[in-house]
Length: 264
Image (cartoon, rainbow, N blue to C red):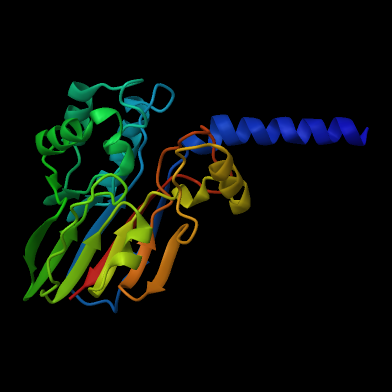
């Protein structure tokens, strides 16, 4: 009897992990400072990992969620396709991404955006979708009486020519795919946005670490998993991301988009 119940629970957990949780979407809200009448709303999305079983139909639902937040700025912290040579639909993807409604759309590349020689493809998709690709670039915006710098760096693993502009605005945001890149940075930022870790994909973090050590080319961060961290480079936020890689499942780490409320 106990064995039968245990097997039934395991089957239900597998069904939930593979067929239900990866297709959910949560919206998280964080106030970055004290409220005033001048609010800047920033939405971060990360690690979409489009594939045959997580395709543009699912991305469309995510974009609707993004637009429902009425963001001023949308930031994508990398990993658009999971494996470009296995699945891609660039034309329809561009048409979808163009539907994201924000005054400013920014992006940096992730490690999967370099796989299969797709980095040029990724930059073209971003440009055609009205995103500004901030690999080794800075975008300075004026809001109220303040200036805000968004400084982007490409994925450290595949790009050895990383250049960082000195943070000189009233509020400085560093955008990176790989959170552990900040350990190699001497500058100080008000906010750092990253992804890559997928929140470990499973609430049992050691399981992901075990899988990563067994399966080659699985690159989740061990140090910065999800949420906020105080680092020498500034306040870091690691997005749990949206998609999956290697194992098409999530458990206890619901796909998320994050809304930051910044006040001046």
